[in-house]
Amino acid sequence: MSHKKLSISVLQHVPFEGPGHIAVWAARRGHRVSVCHRYAGDPVPVLRETDMVVVLGGSMNIYEEERFPWLAEEKRFLKEAISAGKIVVGICLGAQLIADALGGRVYAHTQREIGWYPVMLTGSRDKNMLVDLAEAEFMAFHWHGDTFDVPPAAVQLARSRGCEQQAFIFGDRVLGLQFHLESTQQSIADLLKNFGKDIVFGPFVQDAGLITQGVRHCPELNGLMEKVLDRLTRNLQ
Image (cartoon, rainbow, N blue to C red; front, side):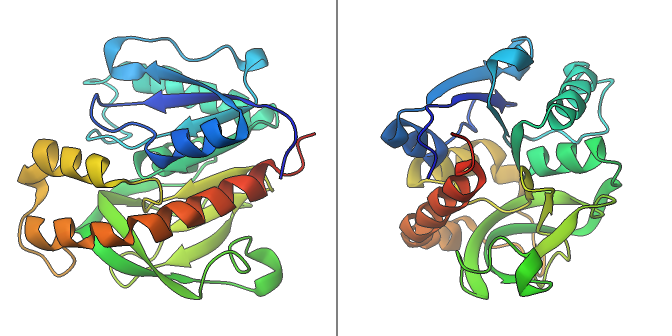
């Protein structure tokens, strides 16, 4: 675990999808968190004042720059953060933005994946940083309609039955997670309230009742989120 107190910049894309348990993890370790409300016009962080960037989810797609002009600025910022050797963690939309910044293709998936579905680790043990942190198959929370190709020089970490690309790592500091480990009971309730229209019949779409029942998995998810973040930050002294 890192002994250094980190300055963490969170890029938030919609009012109701915040850092969730990541904020709890940071507070427990004494890290400082600044949230940039991108949807409200907050500028990207000052890179030299940032140790770690967390890129959250959102209702927009990474290719909707005409509707959301700030996406272009954010993509440039992420490229700079990665080039500068910052720790960068992307979740859902955030993972897609990182994939795009690294040269991976992001596009509409053939189906939505919404609800609680297992994620399976992939690849060789020596190249998968999740191997000793998670079970070979574990439950995760999903809410997405787009997917991505693993960027060049990145390594796939996980897949699900509904979506082949669930996680990747680039080097040892840049992580993309299509699924959610940061979700809490409250954040899931907020998604259901604001994104409920996304719940339409599909092979990997659960109804609101099943999603609500699944919040019992949150403590396990959050525990894995902490382990992943500790692993990423352990070499920062």
